[in-house]
Amino acid sequence: MAVFSGLFWKLPAAEVWSAMSRTPLPQWLAVVAAFGVAHAVGATKWRMLVRAAGVPLDHITALRAHAAGLFANIWLPSIIGGDVVRAAWITRAHGGIAVPALAGIADRALDLGALIALGALGAYFAPADKLGPAAPILRAGAIAFGVAGLAGLGLLYAVPLRRLPPRARGALARVREVLGAYAARPGTALASFALALCTQSAFVAMNAWLGAAIGVAPGAAAWLLAWPLSKVVAMVGFTLGGLGVREGALALLLAPFGVPATSALAQGLVWQTVLFAFGIVAGAWAWLGRDKLRR
Image (cartoon, rainbow, N blue to C red; front, top):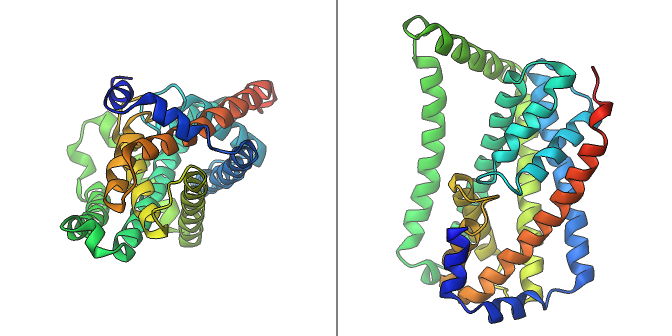
C-alpha cells in the first residue's frame, strides 16, 4: 500500500479519478467478460502442463482451481501468490502439491517468456526517437532474460544429486522428472507457449482498448512494450496483487510516448478494477463448487 499511496501523493487524485470515470460501462463489462475468457484459456494451459506431468486433472476442477487462484491474487503479495492457492486447490482431489506446483512454475515461466517476447517486439517496433538510449538497453535486457532462463535450466541438470542433502536431492529429482515429462511431449510445451502468447496478447489489446477510452493512445508498439514489461515488474513486487508496482512501471514506460502520468495511472487502475471484479466473481464460483472436488 505504501507504493500505491506514494503514487497518489505525487499525482492529483481528482485528475486520476476524472480520467477513470470516462470509461464507458458497457466497454468495461466487455473487458471483464473477455478477461474471463482469456483466463479460461490460461486454466486450460495449466491443466495441459499438469496432465503432461502425469496427474489426471479434469477441466472443471482446473477451472475452479484457477478461479480460486485469481481470487487469491487480489490479496496475496505480487501477482503470482494465487499460483500457490491454485496448486493447493487440487490436492484434495488428486493428492500431493508437488506436481501442480511445479506445473504452475512452468506455466508462469511460459507467461514470463511470452511477456518478454511481446515486450521485445514492442521495443523493436517503437520509434527510436521515443525510446532514445533506452532502446538498446531494453533489447539487451530481453536477450539477457532469455539467456538467464536457459542457464537456469542448465544448472538444474548440472548439479550432481549425490552431493545434495536428502531433502534437496528429492526435490531436485522431482523437478527433473517433471521437466523430463515436458521434454518427452514437446508438442504440449509448444502449444502451452502458443496459448501464453495468445492470452498475454489479448491482455495487451484489452488494456489498449481501455486506454483509448480515457485518451491513452500511444500506439500499438508502445502498448506491446509497456504493458508486458510492467507486468514483469509486478511479478517481482511484493504489494497485494502487484497493486501500485504495475501502475508505477506503466507510467514510467509510457512517459516517453507522451502519456501523462495521471492518465497512465488512471488506465492502470481501471484495469485493476477489472481484475478485482472478475477475481471476486471467480472466487465465489470456486467456493460454491468446493464440495464437488473428487475425493
